[in-house]
Image (cartoon, rainbow, N blue to C red):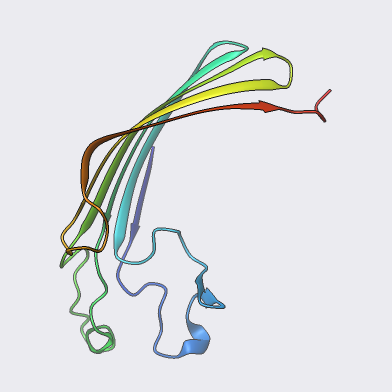
Amino acid sequence: LEYTRINPWVYTHKYDATTYTSNSYLLGHWLGQNGQLVYFAADYRWLRSLALKFSFQHIIKGPLGPESIHYSMPWAQEFLAGPLFRQSLLGLEARWEPYRGLFMTANVILANQTDDVTNRYPTYSDKLMMSAGVVYNLFDH
């Protein structure tokens, strides 16, 4: 179980030299500023060769206000204030190793996504995504 909360303006600074980036790439958490993440996963190994994983992830992300708000005292921007992006993912993964080094995986994800900002991200409800794969590890023998 994991909970991540990142307040607004955590990775920025009014002086570019002290901003938490490298070549304009954020060095902090992938979620960015003004967001929260709840993640839960449970793994169960039925046999040595068969494993199942159930996971749930919920993201809420808010915007950053103007810099004039951030650099004024006291800070006026509240956590998750303004138009919000929301995403929920419910997943099930099965992994089977019929022979040593040969893995077969199948994933099913049920996704919901909404955005209060029009045309920024697509909105969908109960979107079903499935994938399958086969991996053989030549160097693990």
